[in-house]
Length: 446
Image 1 (cartoon, helix red, strand yellow):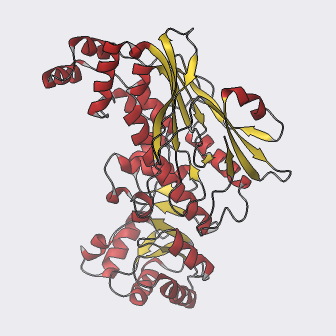
Image 2 (cartoon, one colour):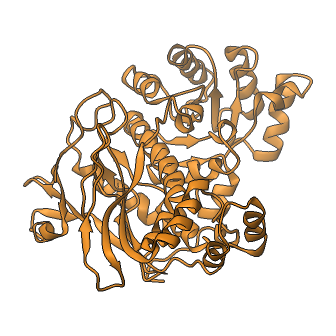
Image 3 (cartoon, one colour):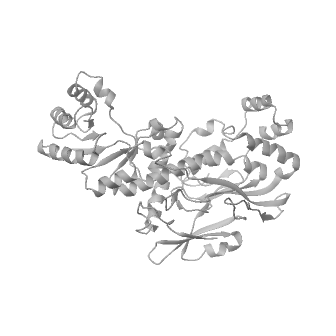
């Protein structure tokens, strides 16, 4: 593994080969019988169109995907179960038993922005080696890119105010840590999910819920129990009964050095203004206000533009679900195929012509053309013959090699991916940073 490699996950201890669809293996079975299984092939991962209203997507999940490819193995238990299902020939089961990805993977860096037709991941291997990865590639990238794009918009809307990811209870136990990672990559400050902290070093935080308040004899007793454990720098949840009363009880319990209060319900803009005035009146002028309650980019933007005295925001449901984070719509399509087996057989472009789902054949080289001020103005997605144009001085190459001949060469850390995202956001024009619906942030030339 190359410099900058980070083993942030232990997911490669568990085989990922059955995190796939039935038809991936029936295709391999048939391809082995027809002979095309050993033909060299190129698959590309891209979206035909961005979700409605979105101007760009954000690449996330590549590191998790590399773990999954390394762990794509068929052990004895899996092979025995597949044999019991009687839909694969014995020769195919033998092929699966020895499966190890031996091809190449290139793609956009984690944290990079993309638009429709951007080849964010390219897999080159034999047809059988590459096609069987389709589902695991798409399940990881579609999820993580979706969350990262939503998070990026929320970060812009927050205008510098820290955002905390807290969506684990609104998604699956496996998706929760991944969502926390994707949100942190896109600029969130922390997460409530401890597994994301253990696995990838995402900063974690949290205090107490309404259940903790209700479990005590009264609000004051709950606050004092929390303060005994965390000290006055903590955040006290003040809206279980009445916000004004809760604030008075919180300051009386912690003193004017109370770290923060959290409000989770009601008209957050109006309530936060009254809360700020009351805190100042009580001498808690340094106590911060944390808001939560199904926040999305629109409500965050409304709070910020409306001058609400909010210091931090806790975001969950709208970050990890379909309503707040619409599907990225990534697909994994065959774009080139060799006529004969063997590394020397040349690749020829192949493409779908289906109405509404046509693809562009041939392996692509991608670069982003920048104007004199460093703003992105055009995405070049060219067949390999046009790779020279990517080398122009005003074009930033977008693809890097992650895997060669099955060996992981490059695995940037989450911190590096986060820094890269911050850097490439500087290429967005002021119009592209707005939340309003509009055209993608740059045109694509194919």
